[in-house]
Amino acid sequence: MNYFLYYQYAVTSLLTVILINFVINNFAYKSPSRFKLPTDFLIKHPLVSILIPARNEEKNIGRCLRSLTRQDYDNIEILVLDDNSDDATGSIIDGWSKKDSRIKFLRGKPLLQGWKGKSYACHQLSQHAKGGYLIFTDADTLHFPDSVSSSIAALLSNDLDALSIFPKQIMVTIHERMIVVFINLAVMAFMPLFLIKKTKNPILSIANGQFILFKRKTYDSIGGHKNVRKDIVEDVAIFRQVKKCGFRFMIFDGRSNVYCRMYNGFREVVRGFSKFIFASMNYNITKMVTVISLVMILFLVPLILFPIGSYMIRWPLIINVNLLIQISIIFIIRIVMTFRFRSRIMDIVLHPLSMFYIMALSVNSVYQAKYGKGIYWKDRVYYIDDEEELDEEI
Picture 1: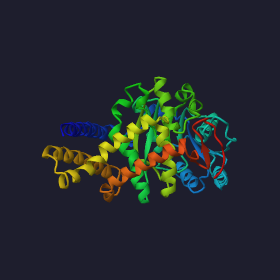
Picture 2: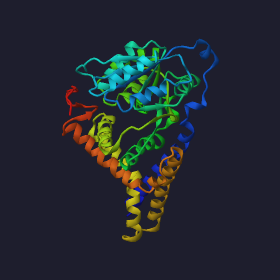
Picture 3: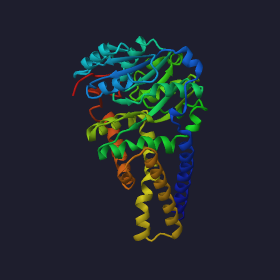
Picture 4: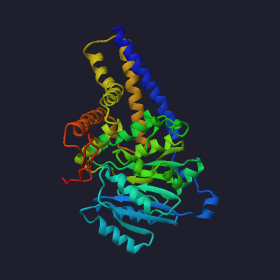
């Protein structure tokens, strides 16, 4: 029993540290909208290139382009690359390019061996970009009028070389709500955001490929997407390069600047998270098991042990007190996140279900990558053993 009590003290201590970090992050995780463009930037009025890779995005690309044409900073070029789509994506882009001269329609080249699809599309886009600032954004994003101006303002005001904005995630089905919320949990609870800019350690690299901004000279200095051409999780990988090269970056809370519905329904949730969970651990089984086990020990196991200890085994009071403290911390974090990110209140009580979803998708991510049919994304299948892209359609 003594060892079990020590275990409870350890879990309570770790959750307390996480809560302290969570509180600090709520102040450190700033909105780009609080920053304004400096006068000298407005006088120089430099060109900003907005780069959009699009593969089979006929349902989203028109809405995305419409929102980008309404930006309050007007010296922009919008380059959209049709990445060998087999739907109406190309024709929609072409139609928009004829309506607005700022929109340029690019036809993507066939995917080269040794590249992942999105990185190759971004690489091609960068070769055509003329701006001194590069914004990479996804075709399924919806931009508020200040998304460009506020992101540049945040970059300049904080003396950064690059940044990433995390959009507000639109979550409709219960599958999306149970899984996508984990992105905010990972950012707010586990990442010491105040250290991201200050340290050069690549382990403190996090980004969201839905919105990434670089100074052009920074992007070229790190080798662009060519240096992350084999990475499935290319957004995090490229920011590791930013840190390795000694440049400064931060992440920002974009819930007032950019919206995105990351996945539509159960199938896309499974495919999307199975794509990046194992990849984010560098396909290392030991690291994967360690991280997921730790998450479950901290955010799920206390909810299971408390009723057992209270009504079945009758553990000593001190153990149940520790469990109650742990559960309180878990729900404090979930409640604050719910109000900050305007999620559904009922999802707070479904927190255990969310953890079971994460555990199941983590297992599936490992299985698909190492023992299944490979990693499926955007009608392509990738294999981690030889890093070859099969470009086969499902």
